Length: 84
Image (cartoon, rainbow, N blue to C red; front, side):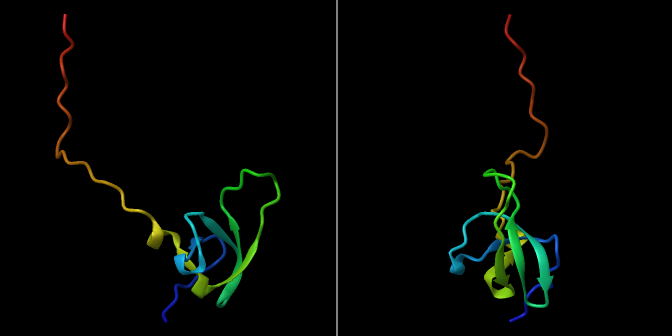
């Protein structure tokens, strides 16, 4: 399988087949096909947990991002005049 070339600082998510949710992680250290990740946002204190993962366990952030809805209008909104 052709895996992305990860490096420290990349944002990733744990793959769904590894029971990953939508938590966003950042790679702290990477060495060929395995590395250490930590949650990007951690509101539970100063010390963040770290997890050892392999390239098969994670997916790049841009592959798992939900699609955004596009606006139906093609031009600017018309302004409504306020009543008297």
